[in-house]
Image (cartoon, rainbow, N blue to C red):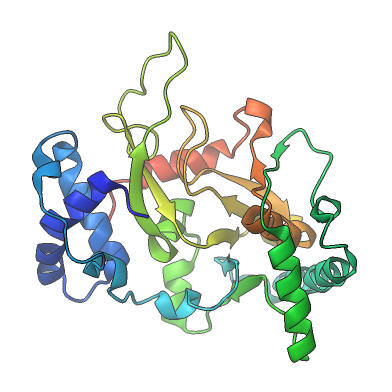
Amino acid sequence: MVHSTFKHMLARGYESVKVQYPTEGRRKWRLRVLYDSWSMLGSDVRNVDTSNGGVSSFDTDPDPLDQDIDDDELGIIIRTDFSNEEAWSNFCKKVTDSQKDLISEMTKVDPENPSENTAEGSSDVTMKDGPAETATAAVEDGSDSSDESPEFMKILNPTDEADKRRLSNISNLTALRLFNDVDIRAAPDPPAGTKRVNPPNPLIDQGGWQEIYSGKNLWIYDARSNVDECVRVVGQAGDFYGTATGDSWRARASHICELQFNMSYQGLKIDFNGLDRWDWEERVRNLKETASL
């Protein structure tokens, strides 16, 4: 659901941006509208009529990368380093094996006790009630109708050289802008006695608003992954005040599928027990790239 304020901004500027940049797509057009409109937040932007019968082109227009993410998988593993095929193959095998193990466990668990099938034991993890019964039933139904296991993760491994260059060593923010849709929300409140960030940045706080993203969860395989067999888990919004959209932490290949399942169906949230333990270097990289559209 697009924030009502951003919807007004899109109603005002989306169609003209499409005309100005006809070769781009929905995600980039929405992003351009946002960055053309930051100064209007809190002004007369709400006076724009958005009534259109419930369907808007900024929701339904195609995007060049829709073909890569329109399947039923819950998350996307994006390969951004292409220097070590052996390491990449080993990583993919661990993801595939862990998915098979998870599906096997899911079909053994009593659907009336979904808590037995969730990640436990970490002070960094917050769990909320979710439709695990439905998810487990769906896996069981799928296993009856096909010899192929359902896929929790889509693995994006480009073979075209142009696609490799586009994804090579991309930041978390670039990945979000390529594969998720931009939106806004009110920025989290600063703690009592804390000043707002200066200079302001849309990923943290821009005039009381924060740039956020919606879509499938993104897991980024980078140069470090060749050694540590981990990926960057990319956040679609900041957590508490001072953290930023695009913040990331690293997860092992063998944990990805279970984490994704619990994020999608159990409301799993990695909160580091209220501490700022996200990757600082990746945050700085994102903050520097905000204005580069």
